[in-house]
Length: 468
Ligand code: ZN
Ligand code: ZN
Image (cartoon, rainbow, N blue to C red; front, side, top):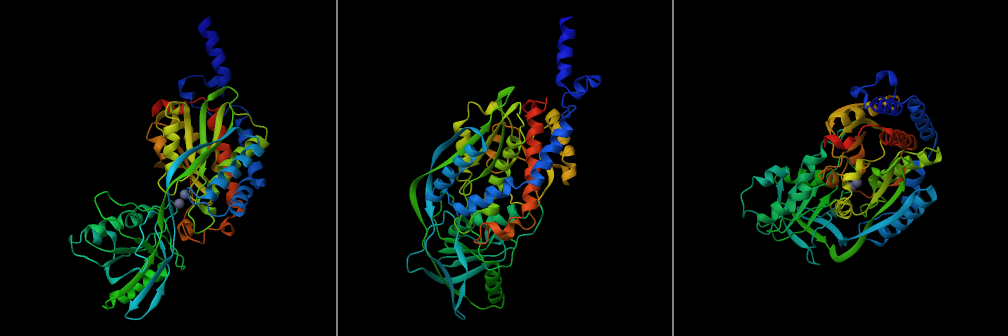
């Protein structure tokens, strides 16, 4: 009798009592779920919850370099936003970072004819002497060409690495193109070079160079590295390919400024039935210093917080806790995501599902699962419920996004709503990443997808953690 009662109780928690059995354990469509999901989607599509947040953040604060005063102001701004929205347990979790700031940056071809080029230092780069570095350029069509060049061959030279990035909706060209940004200085320094200029990692043809973080291997002498705008890289390439010897004068004076404070801002909708179980949604609050960080990643802040706002304003009370996180210092090495893991290592086990929006404001077109088995089946069901928004299930894997990577590596299940980023790398990390590039309707589609996804994940019977 006791067993029967248990079954009956379980039955109430599931979709359809006529479909009892383990195969239905991942069902996420109780009788009214469809209507609830539609209500969230309709509310988001008719609203400007995400768009307003992006406008406010980029207008009130502007650029938000990791560790800067503006990033601190953005944390306070976000605390106010979360409290006004009605999130609970709003707090900042601070952490320390090593600060870096940009200085003067100029590049000039001295011979065969004088020409100014548009350049920007890569994040973390050391400076040239104040008088600059003037030297002959050695040209490498790709990063791989530099990697296979003999050692000790470039003494005192300035290395130029070209290599074009392919456009793709999912940004597949970024990883390969980014190798020169991350490791170009190390490979050139190993060969005795005095500085490096790269073709910007981007897909545009405007004259804004793209910055982004770089790293030095521990065993090399750090040398300065900057990125040229695509048309300037084209120009330099044409001159070099014609067989001319090119002398370049490079002046860049960025500097390390020691320990600074960054932080993650957190707010929650506390779950009604399983408050200890956390569904984490996020974006990153910091940006590069050149633009106002609208697509990277004001959009992710607006989309994730906007989704929570849609739930609250629609009177939805999720069973699990929805935790909204605005990560700090993502651009300079996922430092917010790493600090979060450090701070929460004892309760990562309670994180049921996590995701970050950090790919601009283009429409979501597919769902990627970072879980297997029963959890993946539920994520497929979520994707199906989003089909009215033009969203499909992808067979591709995900780690949930940049700041989710570190917790994913510790076993936290992940999901990603993949956006169309075909044009994302036209703006990424340039002065041109500004609010006018944000499309209101596309942000609303994102917010609708996130609000519906979060609701279904919070109500699902599935434990996404069981197969990780
Ligand atoms: Zn980003
Ligand atoms: Zn970025």
